[in-house]
Image 1: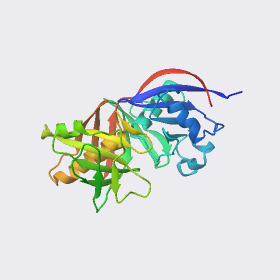
Image 2: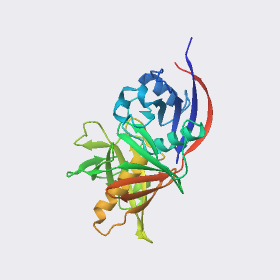
Image 3: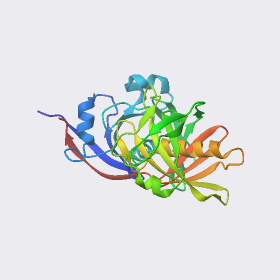
Image 4: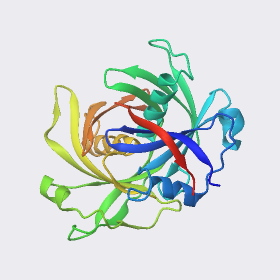
Length: 285
């Protein structure tokens, strides 16, 4: 008889997740089971799975033992990912709403991930997560995508997981991209990468805040309405291209809404909403 598990559906700016509580680490989801749960026609439908497990009950949690809870994030194809900027806010919302943590106003909340311990605080937009330091790769990556007449250079940005950010000159070119087909990277990153396409606003900076629009193709998923770490990477790339006078605060518009990015003391912070939609029970295939 199929095993039945509890779940909650949640999203951050349209980037949606199936949240599965498994405090004691008793559930071993296969790649096929993850893919079935995330299937939008035959499953619940989501961009990924967030398994809520105590750090002490998962092997990867040994490196994040100072955080009680570990976000075991899996892409829609079942592959494990280092981090998810939208997912970790939804994860925090679940911990708070289900009474799994006591979180005083203004206090930080530590969550374990495969990219290390990440700290969240409450913000005007919902939750803000410190993604930590970032790296800008020295060499560009050539990006070919359906809808672009010629290949474009992309900047490699690492914010705990890998990204390639491509600047486009116009809204029309951004809208004309066909991201039902995975863009091709040359050279291909060893572990793949999320690929962001960005258009700067005109003017780029208003009242000290930079503004850009973005679409994203997430590895192991496809195009999504939003990607939190991708939003941070896109803002970092445009700031890098703009030079020393560029601001440290950014507003990034994605198809699912708007997110905020700040650069503080060598760390990049992402803020935005997190919503729990409904809960239920599901039989695992």
